[in-house]
Image (cartoon, rainbow, N blue to C red; front, top):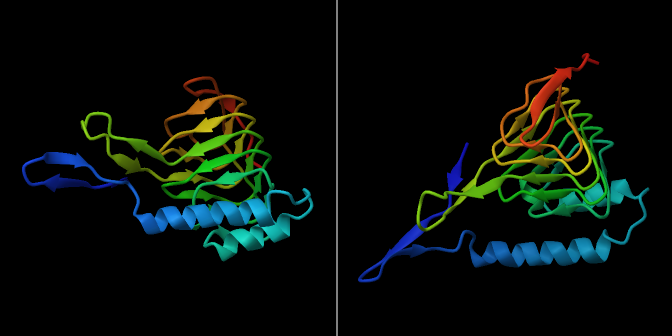
Length: 189
């Protein structure tokens, strides 16, 4: 489901780009960033429970036994859902202006990027489009891979290291490359 940030029409001035998010949202994100910096960013790897609790406090839905590293960057916790037993590895970037939902037993490896927004490049005002990402159970997003706006990663799919997924990935399949192409089937667990 795609959401569009608005434009505003000014009498005598035509149409202009409006801020994608209200000031209240921006203040909340600054507060979130400071909170993560002061209370989580410095914590040792074993403190996954503390970091998950902190994310829940800020509106994220985090399943039991999830592991989230201190160096993860999350744009807006309330737009994040992580299933039971899933892992967000070191330096993962969740640019979740739009929603990102991650299923159970998913691995998002180090330096991977999940981007749930884009811009309408046809519109001269270049409005922001929020396009949620869904990563289903038992999937693996390998090191430095990129999952683009609106992508659904099927159950058990694997996106190889440095691969780029701009289209949905079918279940139980290995993908590699830019753009990601199917390589072979993955045996179901």
